Length: 215
Image 1 (cartoon, helix red, strand yellow):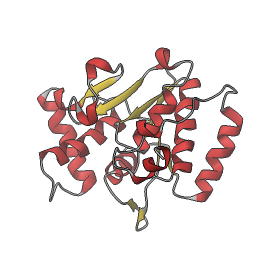
Image 2: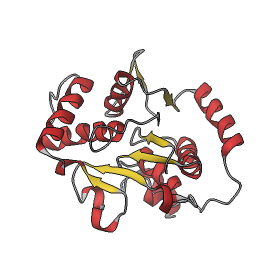
Image 3: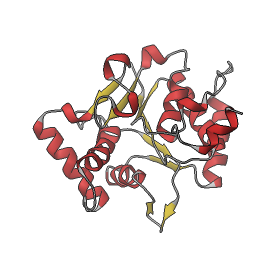
């Protein structure tokens, strides 16, 4: 039985030191019996799940990874346990989730249907596929946009979390949060080795940082 659900989301362009922390958070939370919830976007989402999948308890605890559509970024649900297609929920649930995403974002202006699906996916990451399994924490990395928002699509997940009163909301953009997380990991992280990081599994294929590993 899982203890709770933790969302791991964030920007698609994140410093690798922050991604390494996300990997450690993903594995440690899974080790402790918490299920990671994410969306399989490049960098942040994939780093959290890359860590979770290394946990000795991953097959027991699982994860919940929501795709905007089956096959997104080359991920197919039939090949990936714990992956879900948010577009296949019943009409009423999808309409409710879409409305929640629109409110959190402040409307869908300028978005095509795929963009709307990506933001709606954030609702499932925070509230679950049936909208009744709220996360107990959300960790992310995103540049602030004023005092109450962050830049990019991560802001939708942030606003949803704030509206739902998620008790733990941590942005790794801030050094004090990094220090706090590092101290928490020093206490809770189990002592067994991580696999070497394959950045091709985390970065977007055209990320220039990948060239460093190809030379």
